[in-house]
Image 1 (tube, rainbow, N blue to C red):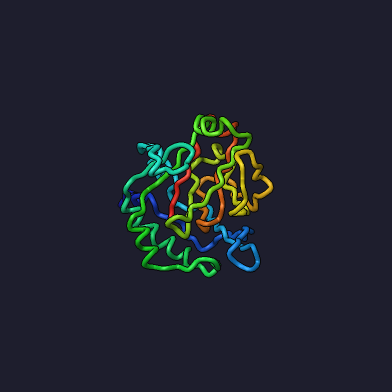
Image 2 (cartoon, rainbow, N blue to C red):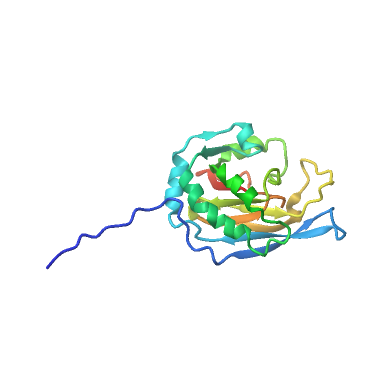
Length: 233
């Protein structure tokens, strides 16, 4: 009898599962540039995004991080920034298809613009610890992180890289009066329209102009950092 040795195909770090099933959430937002005074934006959610999320997570944890403000902006914590052409080659067509979905009523897909963004895309992972949270929110009552990502991009996305037993909070999406004199201690809780709960290997894709922020509190991430891979396109 001939015994054939078994073999395993090599794992491809950024390979994804089929993205045909998309959870689509309709999110209300204030909008002063039309006659209605409001607009509905979309948030796409795909679970089990990567085929090999452990490989992506382990790689992210092995990389050096930066706190350079020109790279991190107003991020709470630090960011991994690495060149990964294999990520670009695999994920570019995935996101191109998703961004051409007809559900995006407010955004027009421009392929030349999209390709230019992906030519320059980096492997980026936000890394936020409990100490980072405490350092940021020393003079405020609340721990809201609301902001927009729309400078230079139409879409933004993230993938949660915390294991399920490490997950806390998620990402909150808000209605937002652009001319409202929000103060440091304004309670944004009543303006939350949708929360994407943190779940390992969940991908969230949204309009960059949608006001959003990581759901944080002073009790979170005492044992493990919050890990979120991010994209701007």
